[in-house]
Structures are given as C-alpha cells and as structure tokens.
Length: 380
Image 1 (cartoon, rainbow, N blue to C red):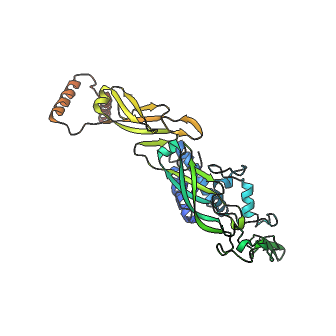
Image 2: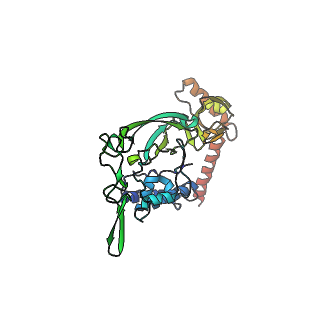
Image 3: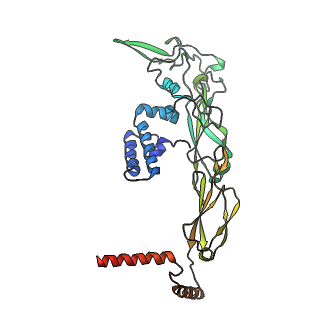
C-alpha cells in the first residue's frame, strides 16, 4: 500500500507554516501516543508515521525536497519510471540531491540545460465500485505546454538560441569573495547557458504556453484511498525544450451507502427482523460486483453476529484474488405494533417465565450477576 501524503497525515495544507505544522503534530502525537493507547498496534503504527512526517516537514531542506519529489526524495535506488500508469516516482535520491543542491556545491555538467517542467498534482474522487472494477477516465488538466509556434525553442520564426555572453554557455558565473569562490546561476540566461535574442511572440521566449490538456487515465482494479498514479512527462513543459515534469493523480474514495471497506474486505451492516433472527431463515444481500448472495440465518442469531462470504470482497491490486465480505447482523426490534401483536408478545413473555433461564439467557445471566454484585456490596 502506498505511503500517505505527509501533509494529509498531519491534517495541514501544503502552504502551512512551521508553527501550524508543529501544532498539528503535537495534537496528533498526543492522540496516538502508545502510552494513551496501550496494546493498540494500529495507534502505534500511526504514531510512527506521524513522527516520520514531522521529521521531514519541520526541516526546510527536507520539506523542499519532499514538496518537489514526494516520498521518492528519501528512497534509495530505482530507475526512471515508465509511461502512463506507472505507480513509481522515478529517479533515485542521488539524482534529486544533485538537481537541488548541485548548484550550491558547484556541481552539474557544463552547458547542461535546466528548467525542467514542474510536477503537477490532480485530485480524483472515485466510487467504491470503480475501485473494485477499475476504470478508464478522461481528465482535463490546466498546464504549460510546448509552444506550437516556435516548437519549444523560444525563438521567433524558428530562430535558435545563442550562447550566453555572460557565462559563455556554462549557465553559472563565479565571483571571488575573500578566500572563497562563489558560484551562482547566471542572471542573464537563468542557468540555461543560451539566450533568445529574437523571442517568439506567442510564448515570449519561454518555449511554452498555458493551455488545458486532455488525458486518458487507466485506474486499475483494487486501488485504495490515497493511491497515487504517476503519468511520466505529463506535467508542465520545460523551459525551451527542457524535459517536462510528471503528473501525479491522487485517488480518494467516496463513502458508500451500503458498504464499508477495510483493506481487501468489505463490511455490510444488515438489519434482520426479530422473527427471522429468532426462528432462522434466509436473507439476500447485495455484493460489490452488482450481484446477490444468500445468507442463511440460524435460529437464535444475536446482534453483532458476523457472517463471512469468502471471495465476495474487494479486488486486490495486481492480483486475481479478492477479499471477503462480512455481514454484520443487527436484530431489529418491532415497532408500531397492533393490539393483537402486543397481546401475543405478552403471552410469549409469560410462557417464557416458566422455563428456567427464560428465552433470553444472556440478559438473565447478566441481571443474575448484577444481583450478586449488589448483595456483595451490602455484605461488605
């Protein structure tokens, strides 16, 4: 399962200040601290995730790397991801570090083009049925695309960029300050190493224009809430032919009117008439794939009893198997009774008193223990 977004984990927006992040962390840490939740493995795991998120977001450099590259900024290895539908994040940490801090450390190759397009985020809400079966969707994303008039060069009528006279194509300039040599991005060409003398009228020399892009997205069966889908190269176009960024689609699942999901399993709360629960019978329940399933209710069924339907749950991502479905029985107490029904229930109650323990052994046993408890208090 994919990692949850650090900002979502702490319940803050991406523009949150350091104080807001700290305040949110303290609140969440207090809620899920192991001392407050002894023996709760889920709370302990949540506490670890909260600390991991805060450790990154409280540090300006780590936060900057995370904002740009997500969790991939702190994952070792991994090659550049594939095409649309790839769930990975691409290049390893060394590439990210070089891109972010190479300029500061004097790194980077001579004349290497900069200006890679920004990554984009698109939030998509899907139904539980779509998460079960998968779907193909068309989305429209406002972005920066390659300028068609200049083909991304930034020059008017196809004019090509020329070498920057300030940095001589290096993209960086150096200056001496005492014992230190400071290297910084060239202010003339903005690190590109080349400049446009006659800029394109449509894009102003940037090589890109604002437009809305229409994309097809394939959502595989079995995705969970918070899943991220990476569309490589579908982010903003780079400056003057530089590589485009990526588009990340974040999936969220709508609440369902019948089912609740926990991983690959599905739960359905079903009210069962008192008579059916008492005498036994059969009920028919819906399944997530649109079908129906029969459930045999044994006599004497109580509220809280669960019936397991194997293989009737959610699809599992990249697997032919399915989870299970659990029917949670809730016994419904009759309402709006007629005088005759009331009379029959009175007769039923009276007849049950003749039997030891009656027809309600659980309540009989509970109140017997209550009586013993009161008697113990009196004796004490």
